[in-house]
Image 1 (cartoon, rainbow, N blue to C red):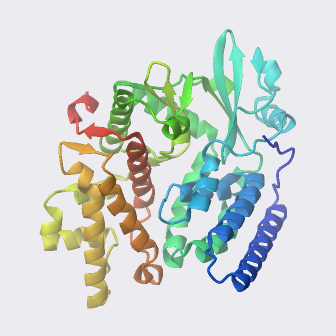
Image 2 (cartoon, helix red, strand yellow):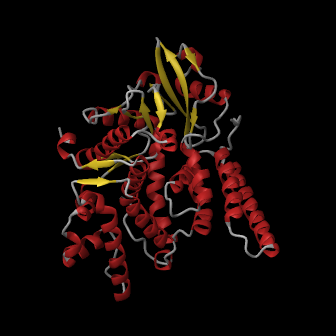
Image 3 (cartoon, rainbow, N blue to C red):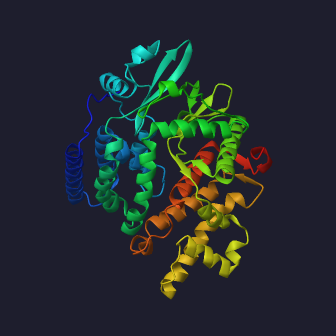
Length: 435
């Protein structure tokens, strides 16, 4: 795998990379129009392939929040064409890593010593590389460890990167400018937290301890003395990345067991801890040799405000949608509708969000729900495709939704997709997660 020996860290260097990427995208469009002149029947697939390759290669060199946003977009199977989904999904755990000298520099600047001075052994090449950091394997006192190192300049470039990625996001992915401006503040806040490994260390230890009683889950032990603001050291969990498991499939009993563990894990965090692992993609989980689910990354955690929780989770109430007065009150608080909406807007967005709430809350309506149900997911993806192309949403002058919902919605979307890929049938076993 290609390694990077340097990374653009200044605002000027990173802006130059974005400009160069924009020029490549322009060239790709010119090539596409040229192909259309020769063959009017040609579709956009070659254009999507070219753009996805060039954007991903550029963001891989930049690392950081822009690549993280690409990873987030890849989880939405309706927002992006397949070429972008497949390419951007690589940011979850197989992005090009940084070279060893840069790793040593990070260790010396934050821990005062090189890796070889702290561990009995340390792999010079990364074993995994994602959007914000990469993982090396180390050994100390016969204990195998995973050591996560943050890329240089990531924390300092969050705000400017998100500003520079905005034109690409708006023009290529048909995002609503009002919603983008509203929700990007929430994204920026989460990403700033994600660059603080001291915060991640504390949350990792707290959430691991709080969830340790949930069946079929395991968590690594963390080592504060071998961690810093840019380095995080934990036990190495033996097993296979969940992404690889999902590609090749697994037996039904294993799928059921880890699917139920995943559901119970998120249910407990949402409703008891009110702080949730908000980055539910396969790169953050390991299937152990014993068939348990290892949770290996608490970088992105959404703390759920009590006032928001009390309103948002009324959406799961079976009676809400049939009580017009109560429904409208909840929809207004969540900003699905606004007091100054026209009669047409109020009816349109009320109907739309009723449909969306009914669809997304369906797994909670029964004691058991089978996420292998293809008909449900076909309907869900069809609805998502309609939303992505709905001019009323794209052209709305108001953000439809509150920013606190962004990572909660994203968490459920990622969870549903993983459970679907597993083909798991879950049970609402509330008792097992409230012990």
